[in-house]
Image 1 (cartoon, rainbow, N blue to C red):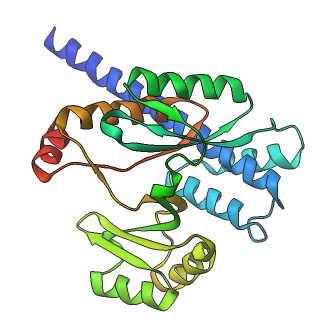
Image 2: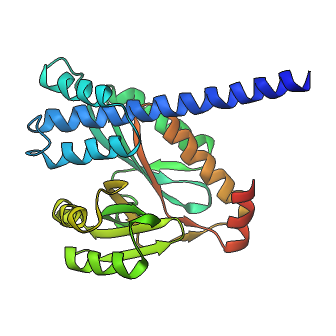
Length: 249
């Protein structure tokens, strides 16, 4: 019986992992289709499409899926997705930005509002929290890409603004408008990045205790699980002791 239970647990875990992967591929495909539709379907001539394809490859998305997403836009049969940004405050006054691609604005707005409300937060107007963030480019490399000094030198040569390195890898920050040029220069110096994308980077953090941190993380998870939501950003911060407990949970 123990073996049977263990097998069921493994299968359940694998099922959850497969579901998460499927949802991720779906979101990546949507971004590729929208990027291809917004410009030329050639990644060499469309920077946004190139970034979307590179990020899909970094997540091991099958080549056939990528090509299908591009062809969907080129064939003119793709759904018309609208890019919308939602903003609001979560538990503990944490500022949250939600980026969505949707074919039904009313459905998405209703869902996002319900996630905020259930968490004890509230959705605000566009611009209500964006001023607390900077929109920048983020380029991530694995630790194997090189030493801290090597990556720092490459980032400076490429024209990046900042580098944060730890045992997990290197995160390079650049101005939003320079992302394409900097990522191209870094690729020549360090090879292909794990991910290249634009992000909303908090200017300052909002400290929260353990209970509020758990609530914020649940809000982010619920938002991220929504099919229409592409990215979620929040400015909460916790001390090292709380972070250790949350990581161990």
